[in-house]
Image (cartoon, rainbow, N blue to C red):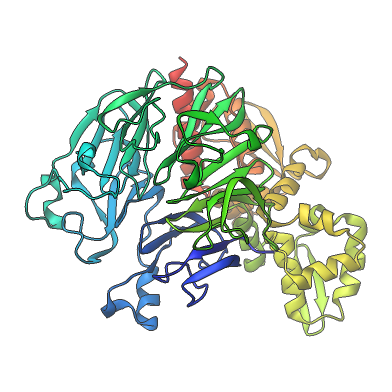
Length: 589
């Protein structure tokens, strides 16, 4: 099983560690980061940026010669660690939005675009004091949206000057000279002050935005009806886009060269609409100038879409992938040269148990696995440190200490004896492989064969594999009161827990269990928070998720440095989840 695959155009070697071929016609696995996960991918014409789950930053593609040697590029590639919430690519430039609301750029020089001067994110000073909530890139136009609803644009503006071959004179709202130190001099044009979402595409002269009153507007090139405004008139001014009545919310809009694809929420189901040139991948049999639902996907619950220049990928709730459009560069990953309607793409060896994400570069494609939690690494850390272990597994060359509760949870109490018997004749690397599955969820061929010897069916093994399978198993402990061995007393009432859960996830409890010898198996909460707040926090430690229906007063108490008090390891992840729920609650007050 593999987490990540890529295929399509590789002319600039922008596909990570895949091949020196200029085209990859079938999906090929790739691995960049040590844990096998990728949080974000964005692609411009000549480069691809990847960001790992631990914030590692990598660029592949058209590097300058002086840093393009194998030795030096490897040392350069994993340099910056910024907590990005989104990255977006223009034709030659990348924008990134960090969790703390700052905007960065990298790639070509933001003004001249003459050479790949900035290979690592450079902060744009103009927005340091603003609470930026979204970014987007067009071909030569860049968008920044701040929380108050103001949408700013920089770069190309005059869409009406473009002819059918996309030739025009660029107009930039910039000084004539530019350096990183002078970024605060960039002049950004205000498009609107009533925006909550912004959409564009890295090879297109077009953008859309959703206003705060939930209306959709579009502007830009429209010679094939790609704006969906029921005409073919190119416009510089945002124009209202009429949508079918059944559309409750616009989730996403992806832009190809001469077409646009829209993902809508219809009573909780993801439906796909498109408009523009059918030869460029709208999934319909004719050109249209208004958004119409794609019939082939009418019974699918689609959770994500992505568009390249002339192709589209959609991902449904079952992690099944649909592709359509041009396949000239192998970007569809199938045999046909052109596919006009969505067609299922089967990728052999793709792990569908994790959270999958699809991404289209201009002429290539990616599917990758995102790790939204550090849950597995926190439990593996206890194993690596040999802390709180109460059992052992023998193998040919020695012994390995483990946690009996985790073994019971992952393979069942009745199979532990059989597993120990089997592993006695195996080398250390086989034991390491099975422990990677038990603690990380990582399934290798070695561990698969051993688990089959135990009598576990392959379907069951796969359902318990990867981060998602491990997470489901750990959540089962929450209701197993008979195995809980520790209590936290809040407002005089006990909250039962498992020592191994709270020790794995909280530095405070880990330190307590390591250094404080106390046979009472309970501790009083000294944070002066309500019972309901501590209970909700313990629930998070098991589920790695916060409950959406928490009372506002509980959320406010949790917001008062509870994660810092208990010193949880996944601090950024917790605070991000809490901030999102808190914002939604405040909107409804």
